[in-house]
Structures are given as C-alpha cells and as structure tokens.
Image 1 (cartoon, rainbow, N blue to C red):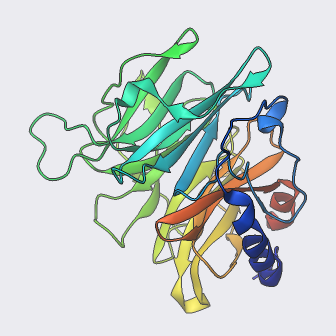
Image 2: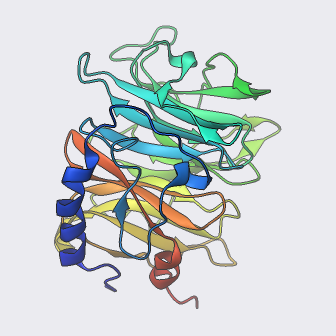
Length: 304
C-alpha cells in the first residue's frame, strides 16, 4: 500500500495544534476565502483553530458551491448535543459560527450541501411517523433564496435509519453509508434518482466494501473518484482514508490509501477542488483538518 503522509509528521501536527485551539474570546474580523486562514501545504493542519476547531468536539463539514457558507458540527459542552453550525461571508466578512435555525437546537450533525447547492442533507434527531427506536434519520432542507426551508423527510431508501452521511454528484446521484445492518457492518452504497424518486440502495461491490467498515463516502461531482473511510484489521488500519477511481465500465479501481495511526474520516473536497478536509482526533474530541488536495493526485491509482 502506498504511504502518502508520514505518520510522524501528522503526530507532530496534532501535538503542535493543541495550544492553538483555545477558543477566541473576541471574534476577529475574518475576510477572504476559507475564513481568511493561511492555506495548508501537503501536511494536514487544523482548520481555523480557536474559531472552528476548539476545545469542543467538532466534526464533519461542508461548503456551499460558491465557498461563502461553511457548515460543520459542534458538540454543545453543556447539553452534549451535536448541533450543526454555520458561518457565512456577509459583505466580505465571515460571521461568528452559530447554530443553524432549521434544527431548533435539536441533535443534528453531518451537514452535506449537494453539488448543485440546492439541498443540504443532515442527520436529525426528529422522529418520523411510526418509527421505533431512537430517531436518527436523514433529513434535508432546500435552498430558498439566501436561506433554507423547513426540514423534509426524504423517505425511502434513506429512512428509517438506513443511511448516514450523504455525498452527491452533479446529476443528483447519492453516495451514502448504508447502516441498515447495524453498527460494525456499515458499507458504501449508491442510489440514483429516476423521475425525481430515489431508487433502492445498491451496495458497491469489490474492491469497495471489503473492509470491516467502509463508510463516510465523498464522491467527486463528476463521479470520477470516490473517497471513503475504512477499517482494515488485516492491514493494521484502525480507520484510514482510501480513494478509488471509476473506470469507463462503471467499476472501481483497487482503493489506495494511508494509515495515520488514529481515527480519521468524514472526507470532503472543497467545491474548487483545492483542499481536502477531514475529521481526526480522539473519540468525542475531534477537530477539522485540511490539506492541499494535491495529495489526492498522489493517492490516485493507475487506471487499467
């Protein structure tokens, strides 16, 4: 397996980032792309320390296609609820992150804006009719001007509690994590819209879904490649990121990846294709990282 990032370098990054993650007491004036942060090279760095990545538990993020809205999840230290947060560029200045209004301070996480920017999918602790057990389902909101509409239940094949973490292509195809078999048996699945209705989930076959848990997919908007997290005990990988290229016949190349020695997942490539974002850290205390997307080119396997 091709090693892309040095384990020792990443541990240095993690160690050096701790002191930089203290929350900002007075919110600064942030201008420019990516909250005005200095862009990273090929060594991952904590994104917006003290502003986005703090002493709280932050994970899973998404940008709107124009790069002017950034959504992420933060765990409220008081209630222990996960809540979707947003910061927006308004008249050239980024706003202080706040809870999105459409979740009403209800447990919510893993926001994902679609490739066309018309929807935002997320996991929501809002029950649906006749549901048994904890209400953790996929919901979405639709763009209405500068805001989002009320949460809507997409129904089958997403619910009840069948999927988590949505990524879309430009034509509306959805890649997601199929959780219908329960914890420890997650896998990457795809569903395509036909006449406006999403079809039955199809789990990707080998060489995808050969790990103990293949999950958290990010698909390129043109469906040319797929990033996902996987546990592969036989290879000594607790949770690493992998990439697979889509062949002309619709099948996938053997995934290539790297193990950084700690849990990592929830990948996202920015709409401009310049940066890879991901979540890493201890259980219940993660941060959001970013790195130059050039590492994706190094990860890409050779096509046949």
